Length: 536
Image (cartoon, rainbow, N blue to C red; front, side, top):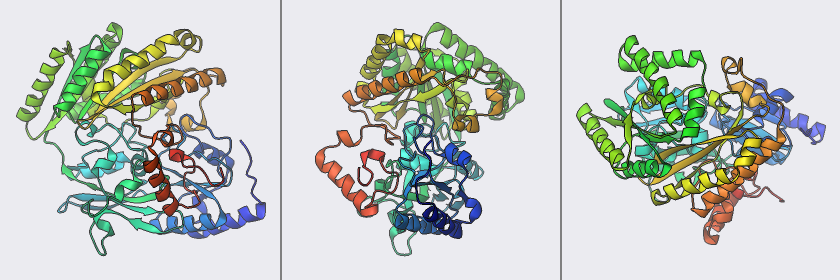
């Protein structure tokens, strides 16, 4: 790691200014913690940030931004840190990491007007627990990593999963934002931008809220977000199916999505199923049993369900099947069962066979589990790549990616790389496909910080494996090329996906113009979206 090369007297003065705003304990200067917070799941910068600042209010953050702007320092904004696309890693040592996790208050739950306002450092799990106690929910209610992932990270990167097959991604449940831009100005959007207005509605004139979503944090630092609320569903039902080919699985999933079936609609190929079934400690299984017992209403039912899950999952992995899982919500079991019956008919039409539904049940019973899956089942390094395509392209892109892995089978074997696919749907018109790779390599500070000790105990450790890591990097680039061939869109753009390269010229000019207005010196998350840092 390169050392900070700022003049020492300037650095000391800046640190004192920051401590005067946020308190001394909220400015982190030690190298160990700066290193931990300066890298993400896959990318490790050549430099580490000069310091880490943890604001506790919008006003503190606005004052910090103004000071950093004056000092000529870049600001890299970090939430839970679950990015794997180089979204917040520093590009030069004259950088400060803004750690949002102490801005985690739930500001207002308005049950009469049906909205919730929350600070963006709050995790999805924290928000969901608070709303569950009131029988409320946001329509989209979090990613699988919601125990750690923050609301602000989800809005900057966009999310898939819980509620996503019905309601779409994070931003589609969003009403209003409070944002600090580079010079410390505070911008509010939606009906909250009206003088004295409530944040109850998103649209009044141009949709300014959308400018700050999916931006990898490059347009401004989101400090408060307001979401729509809905009543929690009264009933939930589950079904799972197995298909012999990826094409049949994709066709069935797309048909179910077009019919508006499923709050969650997701699938695994045999490779990812094998990884999932070999991952997890005995304590994980005990937790699932407890959660299932709560969901099923008795400890005995929960134990039976957990046993079925293990049997069903291992059976799918052994037979080499492609699994598809659907979770349906409704006001009554009659309406839920009606949806499940349509799903069964669609699966049968596409040569699917119904199997035990325990996997779908476990995902809902324990929605925000530990993020141990950021390493492989035997302690390997892990990284996904993903894209969202139109339904008509899903079978074709899956086939093209299979062909890529088969073409490089010898190198995959030589580097001991394992791979698999997760699929899910986004509302009724998006098919997300996520190829995942694991390989033997050293773990970084982030992995050891977030993955539980009991998960790491007793599994192998590996020396640095730059050759395998480089091969995985090349394979990711080729996967992105395939996504580009099919005109896919991406969440978590960061510095990893070719957003700038593929924009039509007038569109890109508008993106640059907006950036120039909110951040004329490109100080916030420089490099994200392909927006060049100043002077590059």
